[in-house]
Image (cartoon, rainbow, N blue to C red; front, side):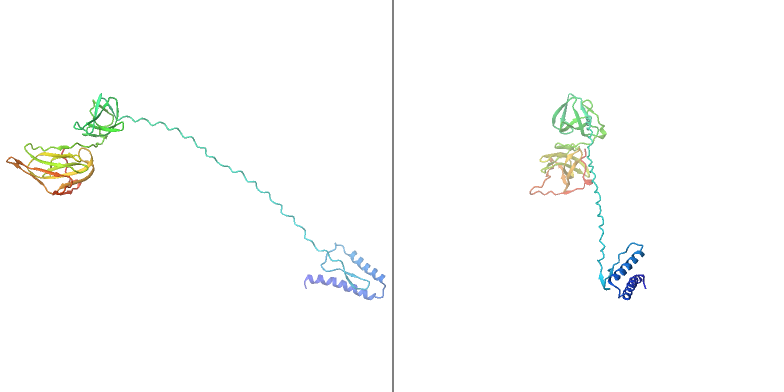
Length: 321
């Protein structure tokens, strides 16, 4: 049996002993019963040295007639109030540090150095022309000491210079007596210009009397080249809307080439539009007081019979200058 069962039996044995004592003394008087009960209670109290223990069962009191009366109810154990949780102190937010970018004062840019002039006029008066040569019209005159920008040159020896001044451009002679050039000539590229209508190469046959008149009705300048046996005999530059007659053409069947474009550099167009050759050769004869004269147009015309096909760049002849 378990220990809990043994603790339950001990109080029952004590109660039976009390009941037996009461039965044996049934003839006693009520006063005696009271004294006996008091004596039993005192005896039990004296024997107990430990503090009273609360028992979960009701106490038994002996009455005058041996009946059980319920004693006062055992006090109920009350819950001891637990201390409430003391609130923790809240953390005080730290002040936010905001960084302010302080712009570093920029350094004041130093002024750019003034570029050195590439050429200075020495002559008291220097003519500015439309192109590199006396055949071109004069635009204006420059005075001594004027500073110039050098853009290009012609002749390979800077005999003519393409210069800039005051927002304008033009050509001047590069002779050292008239102009001080401060830039190496070999570093200066070829300049562009618009050639005047006329010969690029004349025929050297002084006895020839044949002629070819060319009308340039296109919107671009043109170069016309006549070859005989693959060699350039004569050539001319013809501006848009103008005509020119090539003379002193000897006897023979000639191939006629022409090209149109812009930005002439003295030998060819830097901006080329087309290169063509007439499909049919032009025959020339002379004698007996007669000679051949041909007339062609570079633009299509109603009733025209000449056809011209495109030519590759490497198959196009030079002007022969």
